[in-house]
Amino acid sequence: MEYIYIGNVKIKKTAALAPMASVADRAYRILCRSFGACYTVSELISSKGLCYNDKKTAELCTVTEKERPMALQIFGDDPEFMKRGAEICMKYSPDILDINMGCPVPKVVNNNSGSALMKDIDRACEIVKAVKSVSGVPVTVKFRKGWSRDSVNAVEFAAAMEQAGADAVAVHGRTKDQMYSGTADRDIIKQVKQAVSVPVIGNGDIDSLESCLDMYDTTGCDLAMIGRASYGNPFIFDEIDSYFSGKPYTPPTIEKRMEVMLKHIGLILENSLKKESLAMKEARKHAAWYLKGVYGAASFRNRCCTLESLDDAKKLAEEVLKAAENAGQK
Image (tube, rainbow, N blue to C red; front, side):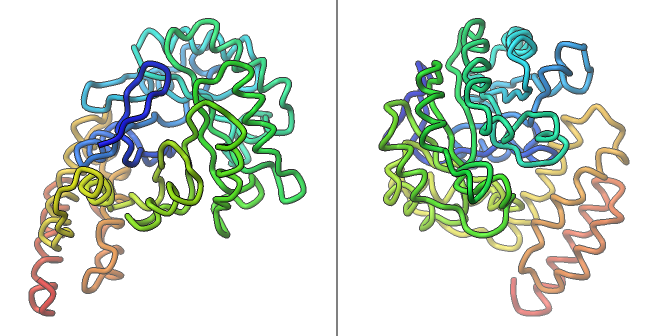
């Protein structure tokens, strides 16, 4: 098994879980970590929210042992707020601090944060220096190929981040304008890898063991990062980890998928501060993702929209298994 180091943090060279707002919460991270994700990153945390004592934002900072090695990811456009936010994050003992300079969502970029910072390299550098001055742990920066097709500057941006003190960079091979459409450009990740000496994390369109290996082979990146392909599919981390560990891998049966779906929902309820009915609203989309490809999936996914309790989910799982058995899929 190979390992990489981000600063002094040792990480398996397999596949990491990408930060995904409103998806990769604590339950998600714990689950994916248990299946072999080598590294996790928190949901997006507002530096100003931290500074103004936002209760929800502060709760996002909690790091549990089951999620480590783990980074807290903060965003903002003001170096001073980012510095103060980083100081607050350090109270929760993260392994790494990650700065988001790649989020393409309007409510983030319209505040000159996320991928908007790719248009202002000087400010981005000030932010990295400010966070580094108080971090006490390695600092990484996640960004995109560029702002638009006419503004592709990932290589220049990466070099500037390294110069400002970043201990690693993560590159998503799409521009801000692409959002999550089209194809991620792996050549730009390769160019970034050739331009900097710090570790490079490659992100975008890794949806299988084969595409993970291709990310490593074509870009030379130090670590692969998986996002949307893990929806209802933490098994992808097990497959990749098994390959690099030289262990046999068996794809999950429908029974296994339903078992893990219920485990995932249980983790959501266990880690939520909300009552069960409200927490289940957050669990519904996850339940639907586990049903991809099963017999009668469309009908069962519609049922997910009405789940109110873990018992409801258990009944749904039983029906899925029964339908699969009747269809000869079990």
